[in-house]
Image (cartoon, rainbow, N blue to C red; front, side):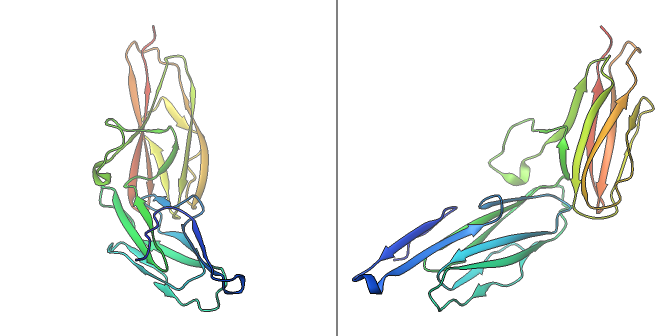
Length: 224
């Protein structure tokens, strides 16, 4: 019976004499480990399969595609197989999860999780309920609360598609730039006027990429 390998790197050496050594090893994952965390406008990533043995891949998700699903390895050498993955845009409003099974001498697995929001780095996302066991129901909000006399806060994000936009709905808040038309990472500053109104106030920054919008909420408390 073959052993099952999940999220790990394993090597086994079986030998009857030193000349007949048999090696079996497999690693399945990406640059950041065996779990792939991708965002709503992200449509590509790379799966790496490192092994001595032939392998075949299988998965059930319709929103994910591997460039190829098998590779024959017969020379007994250690191979690094580079497998581009493509994803559909996630405009469903819910997270989605796919398991990619690699059937080789061992059976390995990689998990792909695609968020329904864009990659907002600052302010950090906050979940009202914490990590949910049901990924489809897991959600976060991106929000920052400032004191009345605080007049700036960073806004950072990564877009994976060209054609992004960002704008706010408050005359007391100004973004350092609204030029976000190219894919890439942006480090902006939101500048605020001191809040002397006597009441808390809220601005919404709307970040959009590939038709998907993620709101960023900035709240400024009332002056004490």
